[in-house]
Length: 225
Image 1: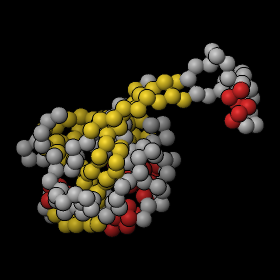
Image 2 (image 1 turned 90 degrees about the vertical axis):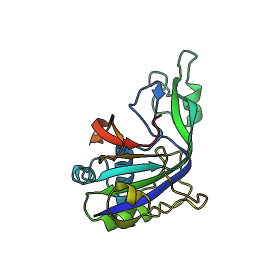
Image 3 (image 1 turned 30 degrees about the vertical axis):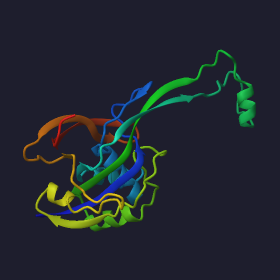
Image 4 (image 1 turned 135 degrees about the vertical axis):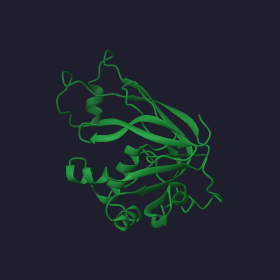
């Protein structure tokens, strides 16, 4: 038996980054451990340069249940800056754009998203579960589903429950109002799961300032793929 913080993440669209590349920002079909700890940190008001706060976040263990069959969506993204050789400290955006030359190329990238996202989340092993649940229900920084362009569609409805193990804790989440069942398609957990398999993911936050992440072993049950 143990205390678990449980809550729900639901959004029309979410972006869950995998290993970051420059031209391709890929992603998984669930929020990784690093994303969940970042979300909790945002709720608590822990900044990236707060090493003590970041260290406390890493004590939490995480598990996710995938509740919906989300679908992939890819965004073709362009970004452009004006070289300082063209103009220094432009007074307006118009002045900056006027200084662009035909040879100043935009940066092109592709970013992966998922649509119709719904997840249950369980946390355990850290300090003061009730304080974390309270913070998720009244976050200090605005939470979002992986990327700032992906707002939540329903409250996280965080609370603390006592459960035997991860599956029992996840079964107690409050689903989004448009869902009548919380039967998970998959469960991904830091703790071993009966009848599952193990994978390795680069999702253990090491240094948030430098965006360094280490390898992390996770455990999965449910259909593969």
